[in-house]
Image 1 (spheres, rainbow, N blue to C red):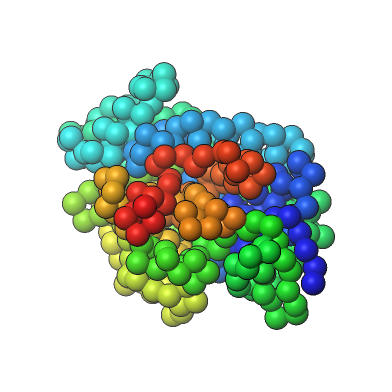
Image 2 (image 1 turned 60 degrees about the vertical axis):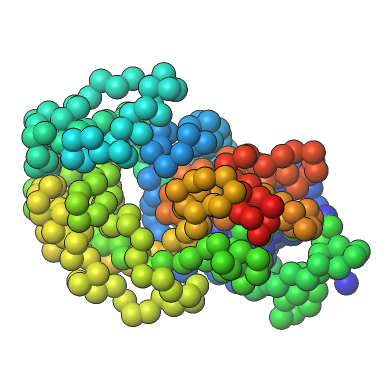
Length: 380
């Protein structure tokens, strides 16, 4: 039987970042994933994701964003290509909107400058694509960007492809190690990182009650006023209204404005990618663009399915749900679980990869408190 010190099951952005980091540190590491880069499945496919330094979801993220930013820039230098395109981020919602308030507070706490529009009226004057209600709360952060996800995947995998097995894998803990089972054979690893996105509960059954996979419909829209939605003219936007929350990216690749609801869609299994996204699934996004970002509103030019893997609310340490899981299994610390997939994890991939490498190489490294499994009573 083949052996390795560390196996990684699941090589999306998180797993690939961990593979690269462990290989860079000289570890005996192998990765397993049946999907080719660019294949439209999993949590990391597609051309782009949003990078935010300041996050309304949790206070745990600013330091992680800063570490990720530095490592994305290092990857750019090493690969000699752009991976993170700087962009302002505009967040807006009705007066008193909690997500806007929390994002602004995160920026203030980190010393980030808040100098842009603060109301809908001011945002409309600054950016021609928008038609926000005059009294809406607005915060604009300059410390954001467009993460070129597929390019990032290729850069992370460069030089380590010989360590990748293009196969699905299961894990079986044994006294002598963790057995990795594939169609072509077995590998015995001393430790394993499970970073399998929507498939993670099938590999770590104890997670089943704590995670839910949802189908998210994503569209690209031909802008009604293209001059207002070009990269550099239009910020990334995250808008919270009574009917839901949408996000959007400027037309930086000539494909249209990418936009989607950030609210959780219907629950699905990890292999339920059909049917194709319908106009009905994008109706709320289309309507909100027409109302709030008319410069971006237009015909749907492309569409795809994205899956979020969402954690439930914790019952030991209170949280709002949707928080990451990055921790060793309490019952078997040789198994490290990485599920930062709640719709906004991609931007942290380099930092999380380094975190996973730290944990795999040094049993004394503790998980970040906000991401620990023992916040759920079934793991406490």
